Image 1 (tube, rainbow, N blue to C red):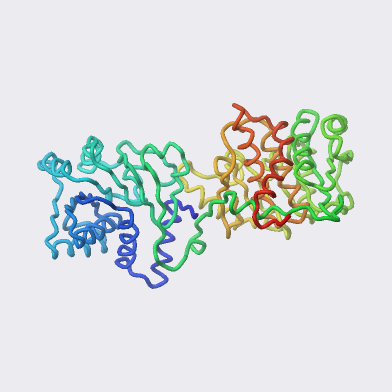
Image 2: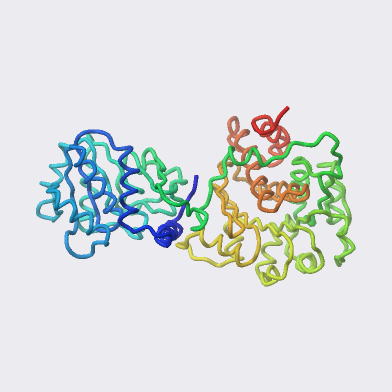
Length: 496
């Protein structure tokens, strides 16, 4: 399943037009999708002036041709209509299909007409709405919401619901179901949007698949992710599964280093070495004796890293002058695939130019606040687009942590369907960084390593959250091997 924001859906439509489709053809195909889910005998189709309204008009024509009782309600019949809207509205007139124009003095009468129908179709505004409906639009929305006996079907998105966030404007249609076209809208991932969308049905138009060309995100769920996890081989040994180096921790932040190390070990890393202060190393022998350790030298040299397959820097590193030097040294003196997390991201924010000089896989794992420092953005910006553009410009895999975590390299983009609110506790990001580093060290491509790390981290948390109010990072780590085993056993592609 694909996911689109306001900007990406506009790009999707533009791609289809570049492929030679006319807007009238696309509207016709959209109404074909809608028609499959419209049942009953009498319909009130409420149409705005744009292409969403054109979808509704085209649907009305097809229902009318099926001898259904159809009445169309519009807000504008002359000026400000989109090209497709004007085309299909004229077709309605040519067929003598009942069309009513909303005005303030006839609003009560027209709403009264709707009370006799089975189904109201909301085709007022689509995903492009960027402010609360006002005037006659607001009055119609509020009047429709007072009708309780009719099914209300929204075309693409309920009018008044924000496409990117799933939050309502001041006035919003309460639909019983929403038939969304081409892709799930990003705002529908917000569970609160269900109050307005009702049941969501995703319908793909019968057109060329331009989803990846347009940059739509894919939903990475168990069906996609389970097959990515490789089974352990018969004659494998610790060297088979990589040697990772974790430059993490300091006197003040020992826990982050410990959690990332244990997350790395428990997710399958062959050898995990923590390069840190003596206090961290001492604690490591108690918390994760399976990990090895080496005292972090004052100045890092190329020779310090020759034996490693992947490097993680940042978890609990602190922001001292030494930490700044470590981050710069790792960027300038190492060549291995690199995962950058926590304090190292803050330090990197002043040196993002160094990313463009790298000829290796780099994975960044910021939460939204850390990403704000790396890539200043406005709260109203389209985060799906911002994330893609940043990853593409800086040649990195970006893991933007949050609900349905974003993973993108600028070309392929995913939302990860795993994780839950019980996991909102300190240390979870450190565990995730360790897991991702483990997979990089095991030889997975950077994008796959990031996706698998995020999914397994969230999937493990989901299993634990079934019986827990909060999921503690240290407990999650211990359950990782069992969760991974569940994935292998549930994967039909793995033979016994």
